[in-house]
Length: 266
Image (tube, rainbow, N blue to C red; front, side, top):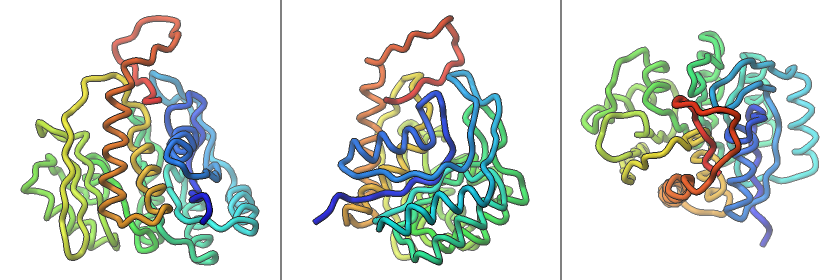
């Protein structure tokens, strides 16, 4: 028996609510041990992302190989990738080290609307990473960007959305329901031979910064513990719901009031 190890490959959020920071918090909260490699430095706060500066491909490769030459990992969570060169490095490392239980959160745009991956890099991510990942976790906006579509996120559309994503090389898909107009937040796990839905009531809170990061890193942690994919998604969804419910208890010392603020979950 050993402590489940999860490698997170994502951007650095100095605000502490997304990327490497929330991944590490989540992995440790669920009993795992987090290893991390940073893809980009960002300047951001509760109001949005001001700037993004990717690390070099060589620096990311050195981070990953230095860790993986020393440690075995049970699962991998991939978030923001910044550009094509970094995507190439991640794909190469996954194959070289035969990494498994890879969960990809296809981060394309920040919650404040800043583009985090250009169109050429999106194509590279689809071609090089989708086939290597056990699960991808797109939200509605990301699904529409990937498929060049205009789905509204209704239950009757899930089959067509999944069909399109499978055609891009995805192996298993979690269609997240946080951005849809449905009464509840319903996520659909689409596997080749099954479809499972996970529903929770929506939580009225401004603490929504990093929800996608939290969910994908939680799924990776449960996979690292040896849980099946459907059970990992179920437990991760419950963990996210619980954190959203608890988030209203957290008060941060902001300098001024703002109605558009996205606060961290924990």
